[in-house]
Length: 389
Ligand SMILES: N[C@@H](CCC(=O)N[C@@H](CS)C(=O)NCC(=O)O)C(=O)O
Image (cartoon, rainbow, N blue to C red):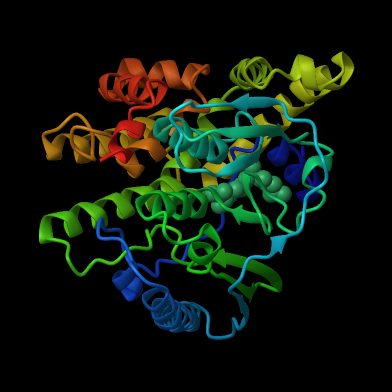
């Protein structure tokens, strides 16, 4: 049965373990903005870094595109994400409140409960004990994000006295928030300017790319080599999650028709679809969605060059990750505590925790100990302690 692009897109939305676009690697060109623990102290620094940074990212992005596809023009670099006066009042699905949250941020997370990118953001927020309101987006109608030009989830909105600052893309959201909590003297709006959106054309389609999204915006000049190395490693694995790891999930959780159905039933349970959808709509989404995704997963398997036995590809990637962790000789890639890469791998895996694929991974790889340790740290909001130092 042939599947139309429109049909594919719709079910990919419903399910949302979808392929992401190719990601630009502008890492080496913007190293001066990488993560550090010596915060920026003045606006002058910030402004000059914005200047240099924008120049560097424009140059890096443009030359990357030039080298890859000389006919691909960069249409525009949008630097300032709009501060919106207000967003329409919406029903909050869930309030997550941490008493020890000292960020002062008022956050709204627009999400699909089982979207791997949304789970990644939640893992970060929960680990650091940052309070947020969840707004569950209806994956078919998506009326909750109608106000936004950016049409994917997660979207994070930070409310402040001037209005609402919108943050798009899971990795950018995490990098911007982390930069902010390292140095609260800079406003989130200032920080967001370091993550410009590049609009370009490829194969006749307009595409966007958020630059610098794996970088934390802090000065690196006082960092020792060890810290710099650790930060480079953290970025590398965060990018691996978006470019590689997330792509093995769909072909695995929809590998057979029965697995696809199991997975959709798990989504329904985890996403509380009983509360959000009428029974008939839920049934349609589950049965039609499972069948469609089973078909689509074959195409995704090809697109991402997975092995015939897609489980093997899943095990291989998990083993790659565990090898990197074990090389550190510590419980986590980040050492005694998870870093942003640990949280990213954990977050996307968490989105399929109820699936057969996840159980198989636990029994065929050594991922379990690491996974449950990260989960324990996230559930105890352990990162909140590190913020106090
Ligand atoms: N790079 C983005 C990817 C987000 C994404 O693809 N989200 C999916 C849900 S899992 C989506 O909203 N898709 C809607 C669409 O493609 O229209 C991120 O990391 O946040």
